[in-house]
Image (cartoon, rainbow, N blue to C red; front, side, top):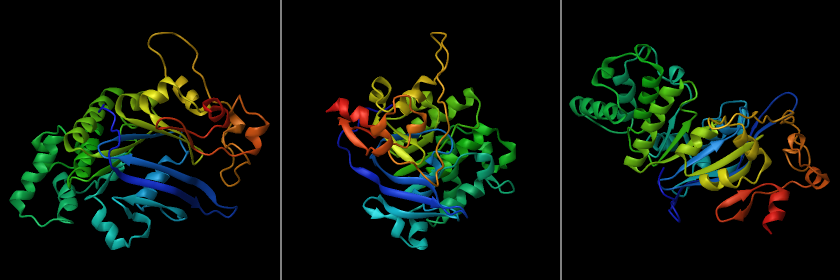
Length: 328
């Protein structure tokens, strides 16, 4: 993990982003007024349980939300330019060059009937003119950067293991030296040994190239080892954002504490804490705190007043009335 970035420039800013999915019984609020930023050279973890809106936020940043989903409000700025307002042609110029994606599930992301050299080559030649010899050398260098042997150049995806396919996706993401990479649960479909290899590859690549990365996942243990800051998401809302050390040493939101307590310990035998209850209907959020139905500390004020994401310590933000009162 890199040292804290201090006041490094912000390369990506998400400002009050909301994404809804239209249904016959009302709009599902998949992302609600989400705001965060990513500093230059930083890795920010976006965590939460399945269905909380992590991937929706990632797809909205890339302007890849599929119908019936729609970005209903907010801005996404990369180097000061609002991606939400750009034309499709302008977006094509930004993708891969300034903003790239490492998708979840490399098996379904790579074309099964196209060789690896052609898939990586397509991403490069869509933005740069290059003769075949130089293109071949570029692709081989990229494969070497992610720890893959030269033979992968002429192979099809089905000939590769899961970890190798994931590293091919990393090679494609860094092919044009983007400033920002979004990694959508890059290790979720892999066994623990291969997870370690892929995670180390990500760290090596981002450190060497100085890339900023938004790393989406639900494994708090992996996040603790890889990221500089953590943003915790619940039911489409950000509930806590803090440096990784602070969020593990002093978690402020009850949902963050439950996520941390769910990490198995190799040092002591203890029952795992589980979050009881179910998330509210995302078409009809309750008044007050969105976590009230599953929070053991919920009181009358929590049921009536919606907490905003407020700074309670340096670079530590939380949306919890009780934690905010303690900090004042």
